[in-house]
Image (cartoon, rainbow, N blue to C red; front, side, top):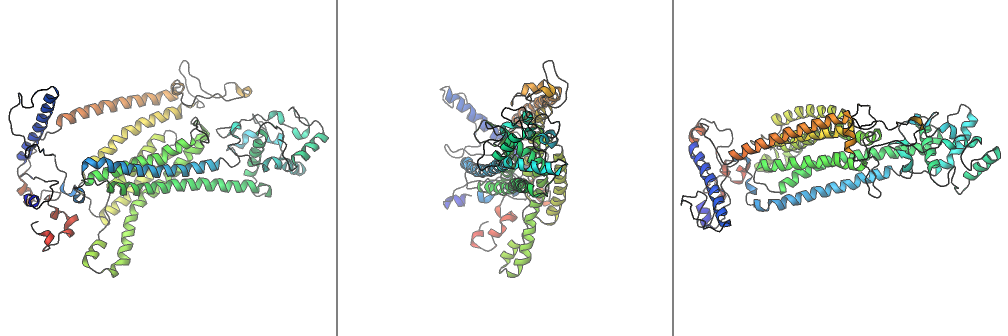
Length: 607
């Protein structure tokens, strides 16, 4: 070290390996005393006393020369050190980390526009409802056979109904244009007064009252200029026609009359499949981005780099898979916002829930196999490039297996655990996908670790601790989501004194469904279905808070302390091969850097 200093090289880091364990314990105690001494001096400066007043002139182990103070800390395992990054200052690490986060969030924002585009495109298509029975005979708001009897057993009546509805259908009113008459994918526009319009017995104002009036109306709607249909003030009749048309064509897809419906269905399905593929592909890109950006941050240890990868993957995957789709389906007071649900209704479940479950099932298979892809690529390179290598070094590099990165596995596992446990209270199928992922992970990881990859370094327990910290957070969010999911107004439940449930307490005579306000949390707590998970969330949060406080207090007391464990002298441990990691902090003893210091070369002299 001193020879390097004399040559003008800066000293970045120095390692000290103690022969005796007691010497290491004494050093740790001395460093703790030095830091305590420093805090006392700072306190005296604050109150205006001389920094040496009342303090013994004891030796300070961290003082080097003059005012130079060493930073002494317990070293990571030798195999955990990234020598190529040690000259990057940790004082500027936050800048590198900020750059990585900006790039990651930039990608997520681009993905937001892609998903929003798909959502906005989907609402430009004509509306449809998942349950057509509610608009058939006996429907509360509309009875399609009383307006356009497309399913009539009389072929002449059915043919005339097709001619009557076609002028309305050709206008192709979009789902967004019909938003006032749709609620949670149910048609709520009141079309009852327009029933029997073409029979001349409708009670609506302006309806034809005889055969001549009906004929005149048919001629009018079939004209080149649209005059408004049943209601020339709103789009309720055009939207009703789209609903009746889609319900008829859902079961009669082969008819030429339904050609437009079939084309819209294909387009809608392509949008949904495209959105799912974009989201699934984005998840894979996020994984690669997290790895590359964490490398560019230049941390000083493999553990720190792996933690960065796992953290970025966890946050980005959760944002991309859950937060963004959730926002896209949530009704917000933003112009042109595609979200239309203000509650966890059946329509919300059909939209967001189905998409999340589909992506989760895709990820349960794609995530494990993407971990296998580096091995497959390496095997192919070895097979095809081995005959063309020109030196032993190239051959060694080519035949070096890919690394086994725990961070990839922890990042995916953290995100999969979180979205599974949070939303499983309403989507239990997520458990099946998570089980499949775990089973595939076990098989593929064992195959890679024992037969294909480089032996990983000795990791610290920080990655495992990161997952343990995530578990209680996921459980609390699971219960809070269950409050909204299980406390939804439509679900039968016992209620407290002022609690109510059911959206149609007035029965068939009620015109509009009664709903909870979008963020009315207290209404759900007045239902037993919502109160029980809320109590569980509060109990879990209280236990987590108490455990965190206890652990932090214990950690603070033990900070800077070390107790002898009865380890043998270092030389004896080396001789008996008791050291499981590298036996030295010399860079030349690290297999990852051996090729940089070939014996006999000038660069290796003195090492």
